[in-house]
Length: 407
Image 1: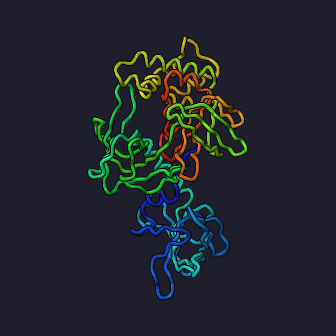
Image 2: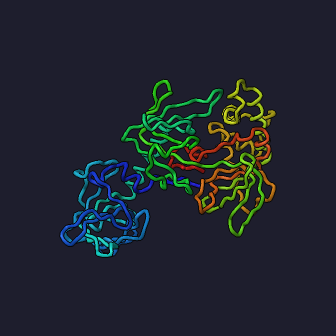
């Protein structure tokens, strides 16, 4: 599945320009105050259609909003990276295009479904894409990921552990009142679906990625933005497959529980070729046998050590699908190799097959959704159980909003 680019609202908040100090967001219309018998309202979304002086706007959630542009309305356009409305350029209705992101402001109708619009602020589709690329590049350049080991809301500090060769590295993530904190939705791995959150909602064993600046010694990190989430990892064997319902039942060897998971159009299912699985297992066994101390015997450490030699052939040969995967994964480690394997379908999965799965946590009423599924991994699981610990932003991508299959 792809972790899509930052959402409309993410870009708008990042620019901090559309709200003039106050962001009113609800669906379909955010009502601000009464002006006589009329209610001042704002709405943010993409232009879905244009007909004369009427815009149909699709907010991120909720029904469409109709914006009736008044003759006296001002229409302004912000360029990529611009942060001051004083520098916005006046444009005409003819300059608006379907797909542009706009904030409209005016008087709401009594039913709240339309706005007699007096002002339109436009960030064009091209501008959103440009800002999205800037944000994604910054995540990749200044991003740091790990597993939460402790949280101290009083000091604004979150400590994460980062698996590595030998001992695990711990880093103290420092936040301020200006740090943006988001949390993935319980049934989504889309960065754009992450909701505003707080330090109190971050839990031990959460997966966390931060954007900011690391200290010279690498022990501390001043975060500009944090995104966290719970993404269960399942290793086990198939108990049953229901292709008609797009569900799968897996006996988790780690928790000893039966886990029900859904497969959607965004789920990525992979079949690891037998030769590649054997070579990965060989490298993991080597890493475990060569390690010293308790940290080297952990699955995460074995994984990290195995990654260092994964591009080299086991037994002096390199051929077929496994060879292609090994070469592709030279710098990306075990997870990147797995991500390069052929795709498969639910129809090709059978009772007793060994699987490694990354999923969403789901809700009280819905099962978790498979983000990534790997079959044919029995040799790898036998060599180093739990060595394939996965994260949505490390499955082939370096940042939220990048390709996770996208932060």
